[in-house]
Length: 262
Image 1 (cartoon, rainbow, N blue to C red):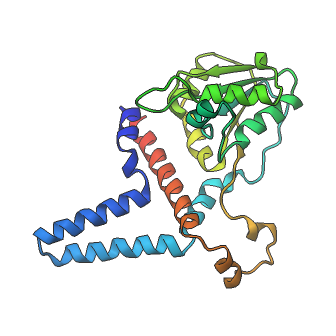
Image 2 (cartoon, rainbow, N blue to C red):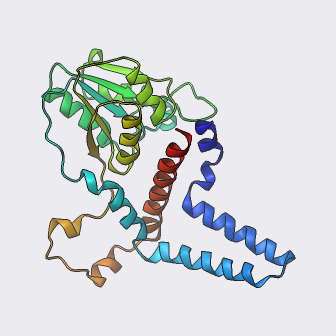
């Protein structure tokens, strides 16, 4: 039920979608039911929406999700490298017959880096197709193109292409019963909290290896840096502020949903 609810309700798990849908709904409701509290609620939601556009609220949320993984835990000899699917673009890759990976491509790149540093290790690519209507070409197929294009030995990669979300991905690996093995988990930094929560619930011992950091770390790079309104205006972009808000909202809902259903 967790999987199907997450997919059916997906449009409303997007914060911007939710706010716009709700504002439109209340607007038409107000045409039929003239109540002051409806107008107040509409104004309140509009204020939230405008705040998300003009202030880096989403970036602060992303910082919260990622802050525990800025400093990488020291790695010893690695046996298993778990890579969560996500950045792959199956449709475009299939149509163009060329590799297409977007934000989060560091997951695949990091897996090769760590595998080369640990010659006896094996990569486990976890994820096939998370859509309700399956396609013939999925994320695992894109990953195969990537590893082949960079000349990595495909015999060192095991693909799980019948899993649909992070829970099923880690359950599939757990079923292999790799006791006394050193496991590392690679995923985007904003997703790592939820992934580690799931791994702990499954009693799966993994070391987090976060990549694809998306929060603004410029202030950490130099603690003497002070907020500059000029620099902020130069980099101001409506979508740039809204996008991290959507990601943060989805991840928080995902964490809450996992705690409720599992």
